[in-house]
Image (cartoon, rainbow, N blue to C red; front, side, top):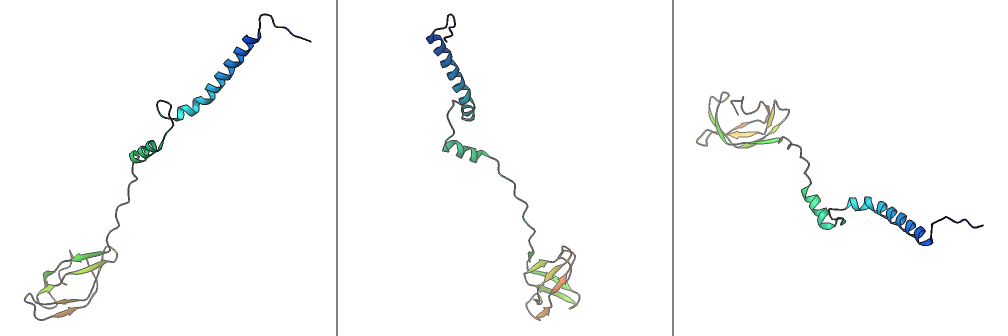
Amino acid sequence: MRIRIAGATLSVVMNVLRAIVIVSLLLAAGPSAAQGLPGGRPPDAIDRARGLATQPFGTLPPPARSAETYVPQRRVYSPAQGREVLVPGHYERDVNGQRVEVPPLVTTTPDGRNPVVVPGGERPPLEPRGAP
C-alpha cells in the first residue's frame, strides 16, 4: 500500500520539516535571549556588581535617645545652703523623660572651699531645676 501525493517530492517534504524545526528552535530560544542584556549576551559578574552598586539602600531607624547626658560644671544658687555653689560636671541618667537620676555630688563654693555632699537620687531634668 503506497499513498502518493501529487507534486510532493522528498526534497519539498524535507524543506518543510527543516523550516518547522528551525522555527521551533527560534521560538524556544526566544525567552532565554530576552532575559539577557541588550545585544543578546548573558549577564556576567560586572553586570551583577553594577546592579548591586546601583540598588537603593534601605533607610535606618533613627538612633535611640541616649540614656545618659553629660552636664558640664556650672554655678547655681543653692537654697538649701543659702549661697552660690559650684556643681562639678557629671552624667545624669534619664529615668522616664520626666525625671533624671543624678549621682551624689560634692559641691563647693566658687573658690573651692566648704565642700558639701549632695545626695544622689531622682530629680527633675536640668532645665526646670535650679539647685544641684
